Every structure is written in structure tokens, then in C-alpha cells.
Image (cartoon, rainbow, N blue to C red; front, side):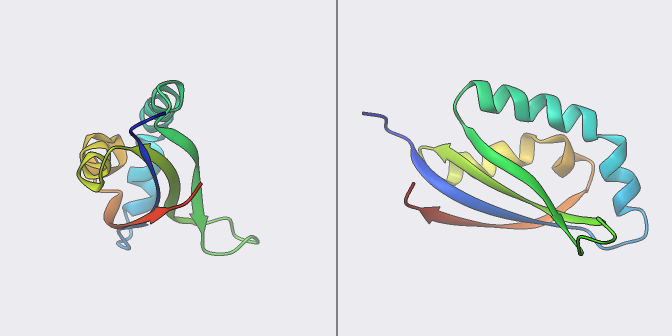
Length: 98
């Protein structure tokens, strides 16, 4: 049995005019990290939150993660290129049953 718990994380992007450009500039690095987290069993699923389906403007992210604690989730987030590049402004972590 694993000692990891499951969490849903909702991450909100900054809303300034440069936020989308910052997101796109580090997207490849972010996706590389996501693939690593997936291979390690930490990332179950993730994707962008859209303003609407017509514009497809990204305004945040949603992740389903496996981790030992909320503190471990916070550590994962602050190591992510999106956080370091000031794409993600704030986030909410919810324990879930998977």
C-alpha cells in the first residue's frame, strides 16, 4: 500500500498583460517537468484552465497529484517553471478520494 494521498490542485495565473507570454515562454520546461512527475507517479492528470472553449485563452491549471502531504504539493509547485516565471499567482489544494 502506498503512503501517498491524492489531491486536486487549482492554480490561478497572474492576470497582467504579460502573463500569457510568460506562460508560453516556459511551457516546454513546464511540460518536461510534468512528464517527469508523471513517470514518478506524482502527476495523475493535469491541464490548462480556459477562459472559454471558443478563445482557448489559458488562465490557470488544474492538477490531480499523489503526494504524502499538502506541504509536499506546495514544494512541487514552487519548483515548477510556471511558478518561478510568475505564471501561477496562487493555488488551492483539496484532498480527494481517488
